[in-house]
Length: 192
Image (tube, rainbow, N blue to C red; front, side):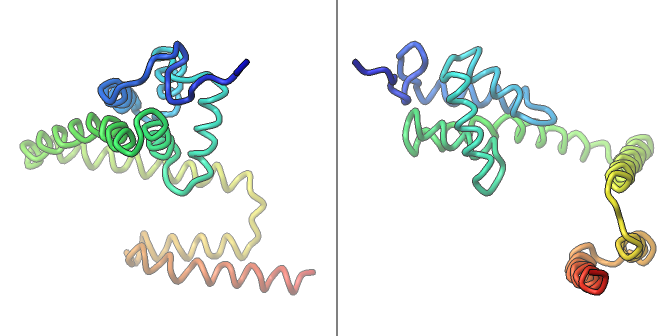
């Protein structure tokens, strides 16, 4: 007696069509503001019953260990599982279609009103708020790390390069990262 079900079908044994794949993943893309993982589980496991909780966790885990975004990896794996390579293309297209449409619509609207001083002020304010959140996150993370004075010096030097001198991001990262790694290695070697 065979215990395992056909993994290319839903929990109730019916095949999952290309249209269902597209619509399910389009729904995930539309609802997934701030991240798709939570809504993906709800749609795949609870709403559409494409797979069990265990199967979902396995596929999500596989998506996480592969390079790239875990939900995108999972989308490609599930599309392939249910409909082969074409299923992967359809599922990924479904996942990306709504965010792309929304982004294009917002870009078009912004383009139409970008010259408005109020819109410019709101954009500057949003940028300042985002910068504040990033700085706050950095401080919060730094508080929990046991930073040595050399690390603080590199953090300050990076801040000066980026915020004061306005040097290009890529250049600062390409120079500061190996210098910081070398300085950390050297200080640990001399300390111990």
